Image (cartoon, rainbow, N blue to C red):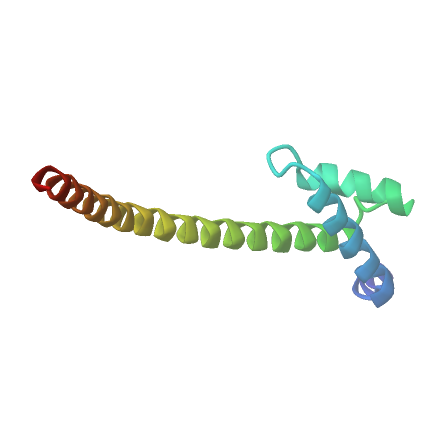
Length: 115
């Protein structure tokens, strides 16, 4: 048991990075509506020719997936905030512009009629 615990705790840093990079690459090219941790792990296992369903690899994949999803959610929330602000600005700015244009058009029509 102690030998297994020691083996699990020690993992090559280069391999860990390679696993994370492979999982990230898979997630970037996949639909976030369809990809799951299991699917990402299976694809990465296939690409790396390594059984990632065993510890500690499974945990590395899980961490990579969770980190990717957290970043994706933050990006989506940020973009939604930007779009909301832009929509509000467009609505507020748009109503002022159309009012100003109407006033100018009305003056122009009156000036033409008076002449």
